[in-house]
Image (cartoon, rainbow, N blue to C red; front, side):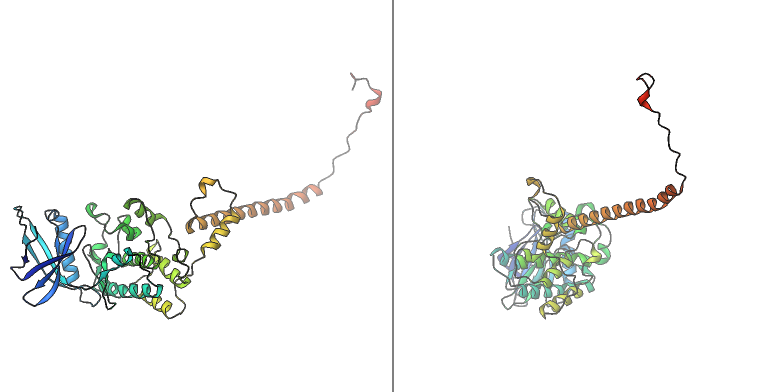
Length: 375
């Protein structure tokens, strides 16, 4: 049961704004300061778990340390004893109330977001991430549900519930938190439970940009495990294969952010934001251009023998095409070396054979004058 007030009567609770996997968010009135706020409170069924308690406290500490116009501000924290008689403390966070809607809600309506507007939104998200990264905080859960768009067009990043200090995130995660984040926006290193740094946020931002451009995440599947596998092993198709209005420059920016090796991605939020600014200004971007899907399919068709019908349902990924190219190159190199060795061997052996003394002619007996037995 939700109490009518929190904080000793300071916050008067109003309607439910939303709920997630670990908390509910309600609109409230701060009677002391006379302003509307949003209060996020840990779910009662999770409050007895010390891991969720720690994550919730970490969110408050992480967000409270950030003071940026594109980050939802934290005003206060506290705790109330559950009214079900369990005696469990229910922690809560008092946050800035933001008028608007999340990008997830907008995308679920099927509304078209123009590529230029998608770049502008992501550019603002990167501004907030650059600020948090310089403050030593990695968000680790960038996704449409955690980005709000106000009626005036402002962008707000929220929910630092699984954020960590960079110094802590450099160590391997514990078994209980081996994979943190929403599966469709996980970086490959998050999916493997490995060390993460700020570049993990940039991969998730690439997933966000991909969905804003195409209306769907880069990878979808029947289960979180299958989606996480694709983040680790598969290459996302270029956004322009789903929307031909997307330019090669936007393709290049998106796929660079989605590179599997962290060293091949953008190395900072400000670097990715600068490339987006170039694209918006019509300038050449630093991200390498993407080979067109049609060209790849043509090369694959010419180079491969006819396939069994059952195997034609899946298009080759960029990695597979590259592997085949390397295999063919290795084959031709090997054949060239073999032929060269035979030619060189021939140049050495043939003159020796020509220079040797010719064998004496053999004497053939006259079989005409012999009987069969004598022959």
